[in-house]
Amino acid sequence: MFEDYLEDSNYFALTAVNIGNEREAKRSYRVAVFCAISSIEAFINYVGDAFAQSNILQPHEIAFLTDKKFGISGGEFQILDQVEYHRLEDKLRFLICKFVPDFDFAHTPCWSRLLEFKRLRDDLTHPRQDEDELDITEYKNRIETGLSSVIEIMNHLCVGIFRRPLRQKLVDLIP
Image 1 (cartoon, rainbow, N blue to C red):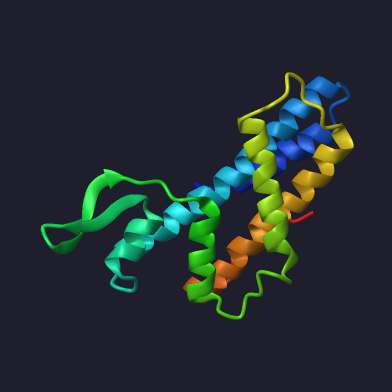
Image 2 (cartoon, helix red, strand yellow; image 1 turned 90 degrees about the horizontal axis):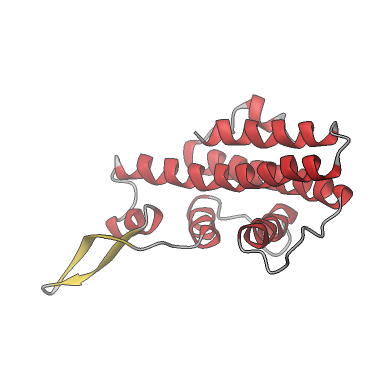
């Protein structure tokens, strides 16, 4: 599903560029933002489900990735049948530290750009203003850097976890 969301994000961003009406263009850009962040969330779910099928990670690590609550019950560590959501950036940081040990969070631009892009999605999801104040140029720039950051992070993780890069058709979506 994450691949579809990446392609959808690209589609709506390209559609927005060709729309003359500002309101309609912003609508397409917002959808592009939502799809891009949804793609990396779906990617994390895909990775978590893949690890749940293997013995590579510890049970508490799989629980963390799959948003299961884990803790002590009856004096023993257990995965509980309860949902406990964990932040996207925490899951990404965990996977990157575990599988891409040479990744430099402070000096790799795609990391800070991804966090900035997620803040844009959060601002759109939980608006504090009555009107969408971003202009079209700002949307275009932010979706370009955000989508490319999402793809770059996914690619780093694919190489680190699966020992192969993200599919080329997805890497080619980077503007």
